[in-house]
Length: 205
Image 1: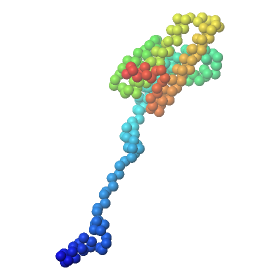
Image 2 (image 1 turned 30 degrees about the vertical axis):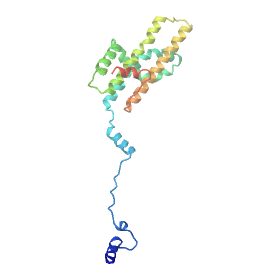
Image 3 (image 1 turned 120 degrees about the vertical axis):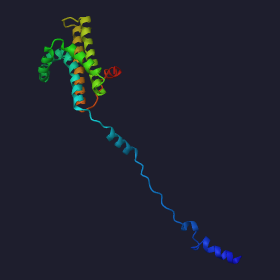
Image 4 (image 1 turned 45 degrees about the vertical axis):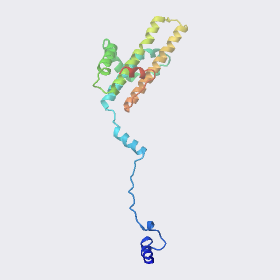
């Protein structure tokens, strides 16, 4: 019996007082690198980035010329009060004269833009949305003319005439800002969202 205890002692504790489990060596687990969420977003952004083609940008920019040309009539009071502002429009005059030389150019451009671009499903949504914004803005520009004909403020210097001048000037400034905003956004390939117009245009697509 004593010999059995002596023979088992080296097996249970072969290195003196050190336990047997500490003497065993286990293989180290291989580390798995998990990409961080920021890295995933960066990879997804590079993969999904598609620059807007130049042809689509040109069509979108040309679309905003329709409401801008039709809004110039509302700037006559502003140009009469500040003649120097008319100098900024001189580069546009040759194109404007060509546009007005075509009979019913406004109606032709309106229906051509609506039927040929907005309703053309072969074009991208980027082009159709910008064209629809331009069409919606052009429709809104007809409202002040109708109000002027209905209310008939007259030619005097009363409050009605001043209200019409302020209204026409405000419409022209708003339309000009929309034109500049739309052109600059389309130049860099971004989608402009015009206030009071973008929601109405989006529902029509």
